[in-house]
Length: 131
Image (cartoon, rainbow, N blue to C red; front, side, top):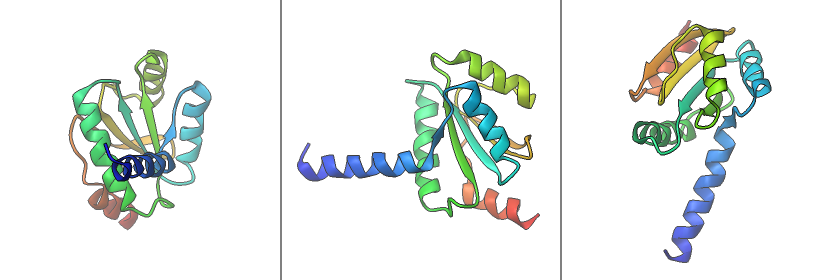
């Protein structure tokens, strides 16, 4: 790996860190719910070393970098080692959570859910903000 490759990876990691708010505790999860009353929250659940999670995460990040990040708050929950958070999320929102699940919620309610499917974020956001 050359210096330019290293630099590109570093810049990508920085940009990705600007997109995501990580959910690592119950307090983080409560903050995501609270944020959903101010603007829609997009949440991707994933698991470490899960192919579909990695694939969806990459696609999601690519799309998010092209979006107006001020209109939606992005969260990521890697529940490898945090199965209690997965359970808590599932119970709070009344939806089954599996690896590579994308949720969009507003006012504490799930308004869109996909499991192991790519999501056209631009189209979804247009529809969301037309309402």
